[in-house]
Amino acid sequence: MPAPAKIPNMISSASGAVDADMELSRLQYLLPPLLSVIAGMVDLTGFFTLGKLFTAHVTGNLVLAAAAAVGGGPLNMAQMLAIPVFILAVAATWLIAEASNKRGPVLVRLLLEVQFVLLAAVLIFSTVTRPSADPHGLIAGIAAMIAVSAMACQYATLRLALPKVVSTAVMTGNLTNAVLSLMEASKSRRALSDANADHLRQSLCLLGGFLAGCVVAAVAVCFLNDWAWFLPAALAALAIAIR
Image 1 (spheres, one colour):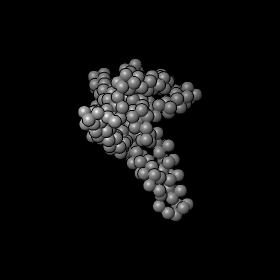
Image 2 (cartoon, rainbow, N blue to C red):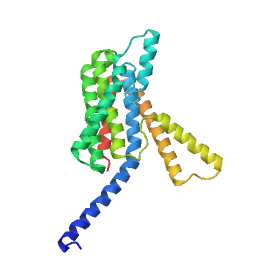
Image 3 (tube, one colour):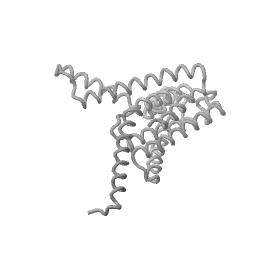
Image 4 (spheres, rainbow, N blue to C red):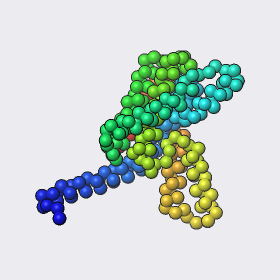
C-alpha cells in the first residue's frame, strides 16, 4: 500500500498523463491539415524556384532525373541528391527525438521547432542568395536540400510522435483511401462506420489542404518569387503555437 505522502504525487502524475493524452489527441486532429498545407507550399515553391525539384515528393525527382537523362536535357544533380539527403534528415530527426528523451506533445513541439528552423533557413538563404536566378546552380541545390530536410523532419514527426495520423504529403495514398471508402459506402448503401468515416474525413481534409497550399504557393511565387518561402515558414511557426 503506498505511503500517504506519495498519494498526491501519484494523483498529480496520473492527471499529467491524462492531460498529455488529451493534448496529443487534439494535436492529431488540428495539426495534419496545417502540415499538409505546408507540404503543398514547400513542394510547389521548390518546384518553381529550385529547378523543377520536388521537395516533398522526393521520389518524383528520380523520374525527372531519368527523363532528363533519356531525353538529353540538363541533369539537375539536386534531384539525385534529394533521396539520400531525405534519408539522412529522417535519421537525424530520429536522433534528435532519442537524445531529447521526450514523448507525446512535448516531442511534437520539439520536432515542429526543428521543421520551423529549417524552413526559416530556406527563407533567409533564398532571400539573400536568390537561387531562382539560377535554379540549376549550386545555390539552388543547397536551398533545395534544406527544404527536403524540412519535409523529412515533418514526415518523421508524424511517424515518431503522431503515428495515428495519415500522411500529410503522399496524396496518392490519401486519394486511394478516399475513393475506396466511398466505394465501400456505395456498395453497402449505408453510412460508413465511425472509423471509416473519420479516415475518409482525414483523407479529404489533407487532400484539400495540400491542394490549397499548392494554389497559394503558386500565386505567391508569381508575385514574391524567392520571398514565397515566407508562407510555409510562417505556417510552421503557427504549427508550433497550436495547443
